[in-house]
Length: 501
Image 1 (cartoon, rainbow, N blue to C red):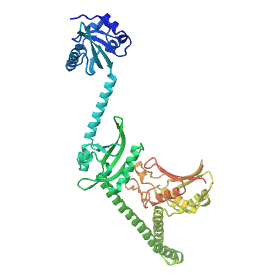
Image 2 (cartoon, rainbow, N blue to C red; image 1 turned 60 degrees about the horizontal axis):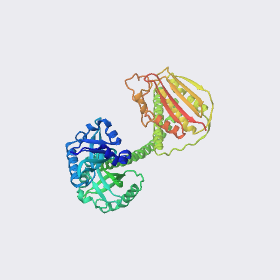
Image 3 (cartoon, one colour; image 1 turned 135 degrees about the vertical axis):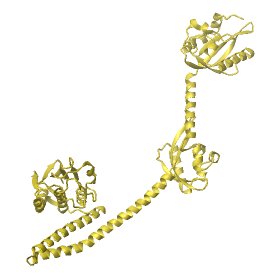
Image 4 (cartoon, rainbow, N blue to C red; image 1 turned 90 degrees about the vertical axis):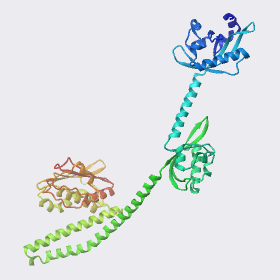
């Protein structure tokens, strides 16, 4: 075998060894390294003194690559040249791998090839990028194939280039029926939706973000299904494609249809209820007025001709008719608030005087239950309010406290300015409100049932409309009404905040 003359080869390829950015190496016909430049040695992690330890057998990652390298070496020896570049996965000294794309030329002496000079380029980054891309494509393909949703890929001209198996199962068409067709030509799209879908396609292609839309498609068997679709742009080999994801929402649409039908019926029932409430309430008012007027006439003008027992019965009937009258008025009011037909008649009033006069009119009820009433009025603000409606609120709050406070209890009424508001508080020492009862307050017929909880001494009558109406009145004044309580038998506090004009 001819000996390798390093000096002669280095002189012949001096600039190549010295300045090349690529790997320059020389190996004998068995693959043993004879020489290499610093670029190659640094990449492989070896020192110049270790060149003699290097061989392709040691560097190549597999037996297949070794066979490939020997075949290329044989080709160079026999033909004097390498037909194409070859790529190898080389193992570095620290156990990692690099990828090198290389070709070689023969070194001759006396017309005999005794070694090969190779020139290689480190393509590790490029190789890894391709591997990552391939792995990403495989992951996408797996996701594409196994997705429970229909996925359709279209090119920029609107031609379908691919679709997943779920698309076939949802629409009933084979992949071959869809791929290669323009989406506008497909029989699954109804004429009424063509313009909508074409505009959607154009917007997505032009980079405009769009929300999901619902449309109906016609399956191959002629049945219509509801689908929800969304689109986005993806790039494949630097070419833009439209990815459309389709959800079958037929069952959801069926449920929505049923819900809408039920809501329609409920609205119709609600309107019927409101109309019935108004009619019944108005029908009750006339006989109630006759009853109340007749009883009042008998008590005032025929009082002397009745026995004590008869007079007591008449007075009981009078109280009951007044109570029933208030109930009818509350029913009418609550229905008016539903229809938003309540209009305020604001006027300049001294709210402090309004509070005092309302309490004075109800003094009989306070005395009847032996309740201690205290005032704490620090301001006399003049406000632009509907005096009749605000009086209705004050009356409802006081009645609520009277009913829920046992005899010998106390009720405190505070009125003061607080920033841009006037704040009215009604605080009682009554039975109080539990946390789970708070949600019922201020709702229609939101009466709290308290039987069996030491309620013998409180008035459990009423409909629960008073607080509901009070809240509606206060909100019409752009105010706020709140309730607070620390729990059972710890009293309650109702606060009304009204904005100063």
